[in-house]
Length: 151
Image 1 (cartoon, rainbow, N blue to C red):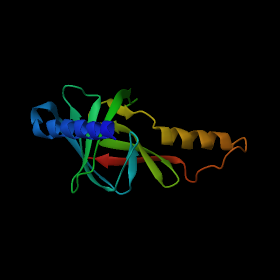
Image 2 (cartoon, rainbow, N blue to C red):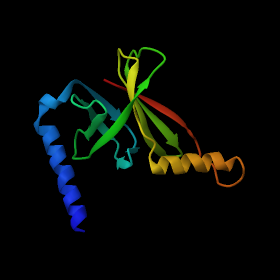
Image 3 (cartoon, rainbow, N blue to C red):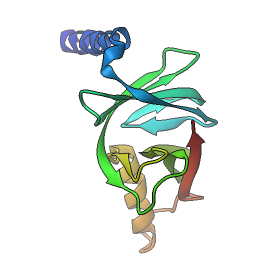
């Protein structure tokens, strides 16, 4: 219990440093209206308008913050290269039934974006889908990719 409290305080302190030091945030921010709840790096976030900031000191760390609430996620990403230069910024979600998982963030004017690691929940669902071909598990309905534009 004591370790959980220390961990929570450390995370809150980290978020305070992020919001209190604008010099650390990258000049380019994204804003996106996400009409469904989604999972980012294992954390479930509600539908809403999100601001996405990339840290200048560590571009692999992104902060997703819902505009009208305190819902925030700090996610760690890896670089991903697109085959084409993006005309508009995009958020790419993997969809399994009614569950959405943030997978990539692609930036306008760039061919390099950021990719989130697959969470344990998403991996479990994906493996269940793959095993369903052999009759082991039931396939989640409407498996696909959803792309939302950001500005």
